[in-house]
Image (cartoon, rainbow, N blue to C red; front, side, top):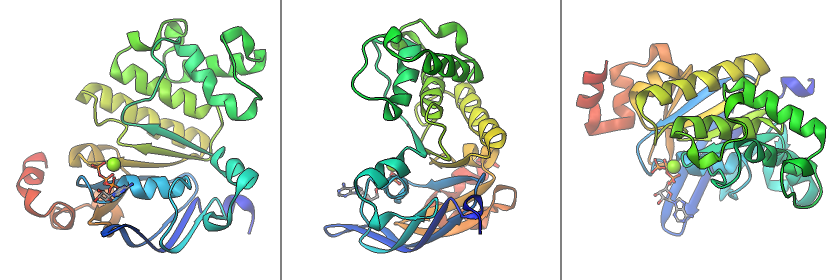
Length: 259
Ligand SMILES: Nc1ncnc2c1ncn2[C@@H]1O[C@H](COP(=O)(O)OP(=O)(O)OP(=O)(O)O)[C@@H](O)[C@H]1O
Ligand SMILES: [Mg+2]
């Protein structure tokens, strides 16, 4: 088996408890390279906890987890940093530094490969600046490069956050509710961008969402979570109302309206 045949993610019987709360319940999931998976579930169903495990930000209570072929439980120090550098993250709240320019924000995505703190665009190697501008061009924001990040719209800021994540040339991109605070049009733009970039770069994208309509429109494979467990795993095109019931329970009336 060559490295790229190794699944991006292989979880077996993964469980996580926080005191009395079971956040993940016997989660088994295999995600292949280049797949786009949407984790769909209500608030508290375990989406963020699962994503945090994939980036080794959370330790497993029981079960096994391999990410990019590495057994997460055994990783420490430099090996852990090396694995994390292969995984990009974007979040609902973008986490940009508002007073810095868009270009500087994107440049911070390459910090893992550089020593010491940086002050200003000129302190980054020319090659990094060139790559940052290329990423900004890819997300359609080259013309905003020298504008302060906090002057951009929410959708634009999320695209900057994606450009920043791409600086490390990740093999997996984890997106935790990337469109939860965006209007429908910006949300479509961000989801289309994630889909296109995944296809172009054979990038694995694992994206949590709580809106059924967005998942149905943009997901390829939908993994439904409820109370920490996986209750469905299906191609989006085959997601039936009955299947979605298991994720949403009493909310099926809303789903029926959405379809
Ligand atoms: N650090 C923590 N300490 C205690 N409980 C936690 C912690 N992190 C998560 N939980 C609990 O684990 C469960 C799953 O939470 P998680 O954040 O993964 O859900 P989620 O699906 O991402 O929800 P949301 O849609 O609201 O973001 C919840 O009951 C939550 O309260
Ligand atoms: Mg969450």
